Image (tube, rainbow, N blue to C red; front, top):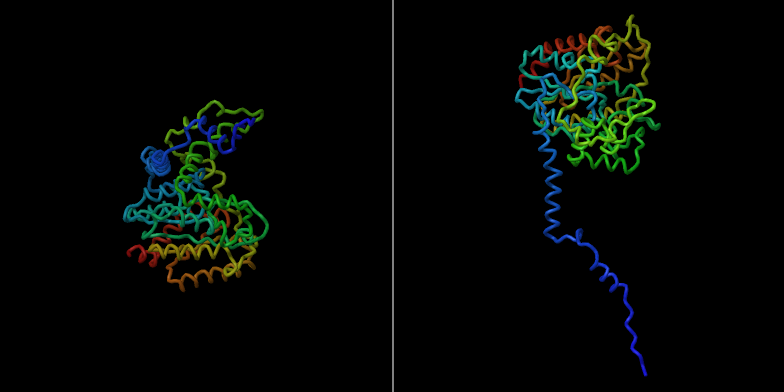
Length: 393
């Protein structure tokens, strides 16, 4: 007598029965997936746009991006868009234009506004800590609003003063604005970030939502993500943790960072606002990088061509570098590099002005003027016939 055996349960049957007992919360229908995608897109594109109406931002004519917000490129872009009158002229550059030792009303652009008596309006569209390789990235990714506008672009030859400043030495170094430099090409020998970091930074420039998230971190969470902000200590010993029981969103008061007033680091009353030397006799020697070998100069050339391609009415302001600080035998090499830059501007049909070297006492260091230095530069530039001609057209 034969006995019937029960068929063995296959793995696939077992999985099907198990699936029947699983909750279906994540097994979405096509329409539900469409809803999720729409909601996600509303958050990604809607929040940054809506934030501009919730977060009050009404910059004065001489305002600049505060030092603490130097890496807030979303805010830089917004500052650019807010100052978009037809007679606006954007002064783009590094800390020389931004004003390392001076307050917002003591900058080059502020004194140009004083000269022009409000017509036209000069906007300080610089960031502290920039250099050509980073400035190129900033304008490429965050300054589409400059297209077709009048732009004054500052050229600071300080960035060719050594292989270290040029970022062309093989030794790794820490520098400002690493997210803005080219992540893959051209290769930067001083930049040793790993592939994940480079990819993340490259993608971040192409997704404005990430720039907005970084804006929140800088403006409200001490430049940290919400998790790190919650567990951050106060920097004292023994440490305390003031944010442990606070919710990150409680800090979103829609109040932007502003420059301190008075500023202990800048302005005529600060200790830093003083001449670089008491006797004006320089002994510093610079290891100048030739223009044809310089990564920074190549980046500046690409930036000029980009602005021309965007139909900008461009003029370059070259220097003025503090020649007083250099040893006498070092000046010949500098003047050769300066002449090479001028020749390139001429061959590229880019108008330029090279202001005269200021009095020694008007510099705070190798390239940054003090308040009266900026005033003198503004007066000289305003009375320059080539500049006046550029302003007319």
